[in-house]
Image (tube, rainbow, N blue to C red):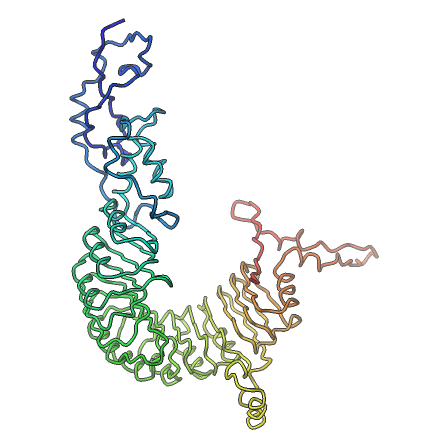
Length: 579
């Protein structure tokens, strides 16, 4: 047996296409030798190696090659890596610590015990969920190094912060991902300025930040702290924050911010926007009556400082016709989506003002307003060639005639929400039975026409239709070949014998709160098997006196469709949701 030879380093396989093959730095010296032969890989016990020492690769060349390796470069924004979700991770089981390196046996960073190349290990581990990835890092040194490089290469992180978690937990997780571009936090604990400071320090290249709050968390960030964060993050393009009830007022100045979502706003003293590249804004105010926010001044400032706005969503009880006039005076030429929700003082005159200023709208949401069928007529006259989504829920002055007219005139319509429009009088103004009877006797034609209405819609492009809460709807006839989602929740007075659904592509029907007979009728009409059962194989007598049985629907060509290559494509069965 030859003398004891020093253990040479294993050569790195050339895998230029793999991002992990160039990402391993110089390997530190081993604390003990390997039990396998460094030349052929066979166990040393009782082994006599026949490979000469000249055939082995010198350690110096390997170390120089590994030392010159650089981490994999960050991919461009459109080709991001998979998102890292931590919804199932327990805070009591933290990730591996830097101090545990001495207790872990050292493995070769290129080949593990199963002789798996580093490129293959990279592809395997990058497909694991984060909890499994944290557990895999405790297996060996090679796996630990690969998982660390996966953390460094991650560009999107979704993290759930438990109730008892502290800011140090957030900082420790963010330090593992220095190249983060998008961050989403689901907060079950309180949010304050320390959290923002930790994010700003750990994520220098952050482009998107989302902070969602739960019922057990409180957002304590004020307007000045949010303004400083936005001003310091010069790469930030998207900001979405929930629970902004403690802002008080804010001044946002950013040349890169393009999307801004703020919810639970209340009694703001000032709202100043200096964001010339802002394209989408969503401001959701609280539903409290004592909200004293000046929406007219805010909308006027948006028009002057944010000329590139395309999507506007404002939900507030203080929306009025004056706010709409201020918005139309802003002359936002690129506006494509307008959503003004819960404005009971928005009338048909407001619709006329919107139609005269913005004639290229693709989405219009006036839910909770006081518009009538006349306002729908103006919408149909101005937006027949552009409007694809119309939402008019919680509009008590709209009848089935206006809905039918909109479906007939808006040929590009793909989504329509008319929930809680056709309702019973007792649902709209809940009072005692005596007052209701007295009111109906005085005005027999005022609210009585809303009971037992029928709705007939025939549309070739409509995909989603919502009629939730239309308790005054008695008959419904739909002929929509592209419809795939229908919401009939709480349509309690819809008669089963007056329902006809001619929607071959229907996937989901929501029927919560409907009668059992109505649910059974829906299931019979949308099910191909039930339609075949209704055929009953009706016979037909021919001219020669013979009888021929009619083929059921599931044997006809309507039950199946043939693709371009002649393959039979079976349609999916519709799902009726009643819970």
